[in-house]
Amino acid sequence: MEHANLGKFSGKVTIDGLSPEIERGKKLLVILYDQSQKDKSKPPLFATCNADGSFSFFSYTANDGVPVGTYVVLFAELTASRSKGLTQPDALKNLYNDPDKNIQDKNLVVSVTSSGKTDYSFNLDIAGKEPVTTPGANAVTEFRKN
Image 1 (cartoon, one colour):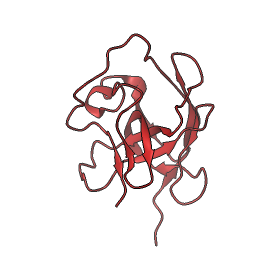
Image 2: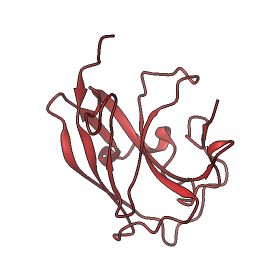
Image 3: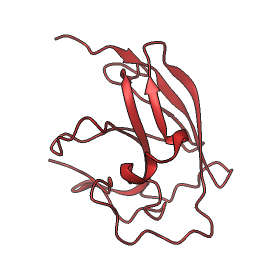
């Protein structure tokens, strides 16, 4: 099997400038949304953050990265369920899970090259913001188990 050309993609997520306080039973996800990949049956790439907010993507082996390309970075803190996978509600208030919105923020559009980058830093402003009650058509709100 031929492996895709990969680039490292890892770093850290903070929420309101602090390490995330991930609720019990939830997973903080960094999601790479490929605008050119409109196939809804294929979920976007994602990595789970550690307690300190650090994350690292892998495709075949630990920390090897993701296929080279341009992605819109999304974030969600979803509820983990053995039977359903990862589902709403999003503890980040659906503020960062919509690629159509995030593409407008140049800090959330990344080009992964073969040299990769391991020190990405994303700060999510949540405090005082109103929740998005109706996520956009392309928003990532769940990762269902098959």
